[in-house]
Length: 380
Image (cartoon, rainbow, N blue to C red; front, side, top):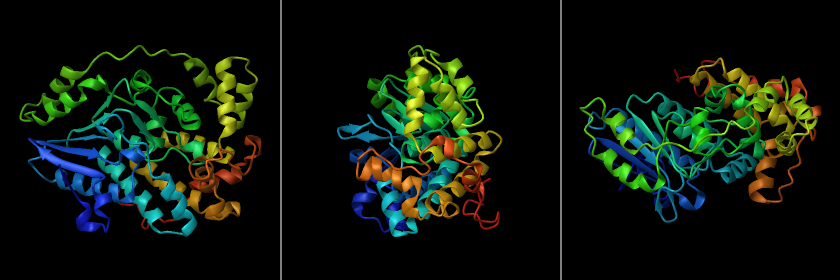
């Protein structure tokens, strides 16, 4: 395979460049995320490589479709992408590195490019598919899950919110399951992903190498090429138990996170109690910000949702309305506790869900830019 993109526009080392491998075989552009030791977590260099590759193939008449997969330490597949590089976020925020702003602007533009891509885009969502990995995969025409898929938007674990278009695709899950997934970071298997509209087909993980090779052999002069390929490899997913679906819609349809938690704690049911414990561990402020995000996003286009999320990013790392510096933000504190010091004892401010006020939440949705100067103003 040959590497695409970095050497033309990014001063990345050759090691960083090898994190995105690409080639054209037959009529298909094939991409492998190749940073297995970091579970293919996205760096700015990788985002730039992906963007340049997809733009080149978009305008290349020889390329009729694109497919993307991840890799594990043993080779292709086994892991898709665990998200963005949160250690970089932490370091860049503390250092005032402007590359942090570039990361999110360029990542969200990449997400939009994939959602609007004019050629079939196939995502092999095998293994871990979280955060930024979901941002890459959810815009695909064919979203493949396997028995190894572990899918989530776990950002509230680190005092963050489900970005990369998460407001858009989670808010369109049935009922109030989007709020549930956004607030709890619940991990989904293949059956749940399919049932909630976050995947399209189920393949056997052992057949992925064969499916990848067969995809590269397709003749796209036949209009049904992709559909026939999917039918060849698709298998029935395990049955999805609705489980607590009624409870999810009831509790996660309430007006505020405080109301949700108090109602869950008043319910003796084991699921309700466990869910309340999970929510009590998250940043109270960012839970309420996330709830507002999902509910606003229901009426937004993808482009407008991404612009809103870009505004939110700015306030996460510059929470001046809270009298805090970047180093005192919920996000930097959450990453510190989870991934840097690993003490798993974040000091949230405020500490209690009941102490979050509308005045703390509303400024996250106030854009620091005008429509003409917004970094994502070009998205349609």
